[in-house]
Length: 448
Image 1 (spheres, helix red, strand yellow):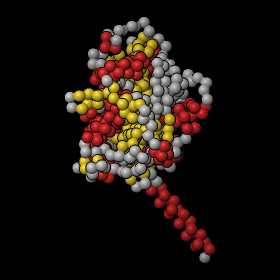
Image 2: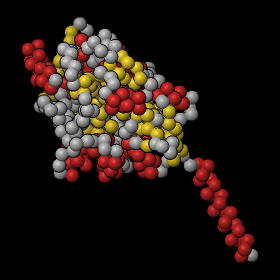
Image 3: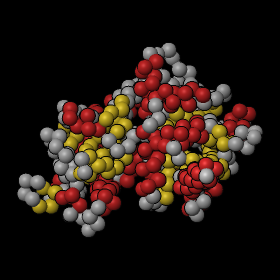
Image 4: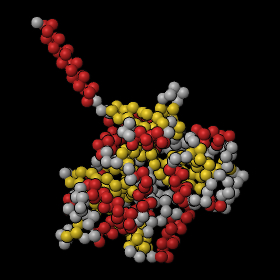
């Protein structure tokens, strides 16, 4: 009798264990096989690098199994399109990709530097008369073709081929993708024989999924929220992502590394970027509800709605321009966060009234309307510095717009008129023509 009871218990345990395995969640993650130190293949054929360690940490925190599937850029995109993988480990945001794919928050901020041989001295980037070597099928090629079409490009097949050519100093110029400098703790090391000629652009490595896969994006952000600053510091140190560190307070360093963490549902990355002639950068992370309770500031703004007029109880599209004005002011200053669905007193109003004014009255329709507004008033290039998400606070939707400092001046287009705004005294302030030119010179041109 006892043996039968034991047998039943063992069978029950086996059934539970089997069911757990059936229901166990697993994501397949595409990663580049030749992009050291971010993602590459070691001698044993295993995926290795900063992004690989980041995702392994994420897997442990999210309790979701992952499998890495390495390949080149075309392989990764093709596998995502055919559902052979669920996620691309890290990709650069672009308008073209955003048509078919969704992006998570940044994993790491990078910058693209045009490097040339030390004995070469062109007057400007567009006067360069020699080949610029880049890896084909990447974001950099699209950027150069769009912004500097006169350049002659030498398209290489892989990053390994590019790095080998740089070590041998067999090419005249190349584009170097490096982690972005933070608080002057990062001194970008230019390879021997070359010098920095110009910083082309800044962009963020972000997880990428097929359009509409909200479940996967939610899982990604849920796992990243649990990553500690100590975890991220260990990964960054291992792969020497930040080079030539100076001696600083370790607590400050933890805060800086903490910018890598993805934040979700009530936790945001709040960027406070202060750039001087050395391109220094300051950032801080905060809790959404806690910051709302503190009220508006130079880096936080509340708007009751996108287009619903609470005073007249009607749709009022004029309010959209107020939202666009605030975004442009943050872009032209040091970044910040705009919350839509929160009134001036910090009360959560939600987005239901805005939803009711849209033909597609839900989160997707709202984000589409906001994206269209940004396209029409600030230009599509502004999306590079803007992250839009909808979070739920007390059963009410709130739109959180995280805005980074723009690399170029952004003008607000109103019909035939253009206006320029900056952030000052916790509000969006317009500048006249003379003040605008002086501001642009001090805010951007002085850093060149």
